[in-house]
Length: 341
Image (cartoon, rainbow, N blue to C red):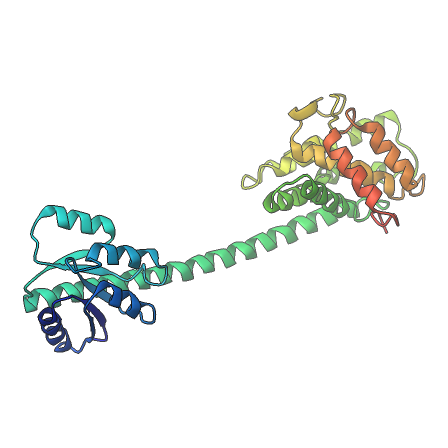
């Protein structure tokens, strides 16, 4: 058996007996005579198990065990107390301190070997189990990453299909998603929240799949009847996305990105913080991209005019917090690169 045992006892005769019994089973045995010597030994070595005498001068077993457990390099080594005491108090104190078992002195050969074999086998089984859990956890994480990557690819493909319906706004959904993620980042949202808002932004216009191409691609402004049809796309988007139960928040961007902070938007006329935060972010990003992109009936609106419109919409059309962040993004974009190319 390839076990390495450290025996710590101030009584040389106990060390001799323990060494004789354990060595007979082909175990590797190291012996030291004090707690201080044990800690020095452990600073450079890591045995499989430690047999530690309770009663020793200068540093007893409890104090030695405390140092062992406080050191991250030795804390996981199983420690068995050696003691001639038979009182419950010593045993209770030892177990609370981190010892996993007690072996009585004087040693009984069969008992000592059985205890040692059982403890080391159990410890190695636990280590093997921990390793297997680690391996399986990595496999699950890798699989989750693959699924997440595939999900993003599917969402991007779907958003691309939506944008393909509109001759004049190619890439609109991807830009709105990226602007939304940037706003969320500057607002202090977590990385996961930023990624979620990006996906929500990609599908904010998915309802346009159900809008006739003739209306979407009309080369002039819409009449009232056509505009009423366009205004149904948030509800159509809700119907499409509500079936994705694993990510219910996808619906919020599609359904509510045309709500206004003052309550005058559609489809439900929500106002203020009653509008889901994702939709409030996307609303600003969506409006910015609409103004900074070409249309059949106009070119790209000049940057300062776009800025003025965002400023004008603070507190009415837009959440003022996210409008201010969008304005800061515009001010930082000195070359007007943040737009359709």
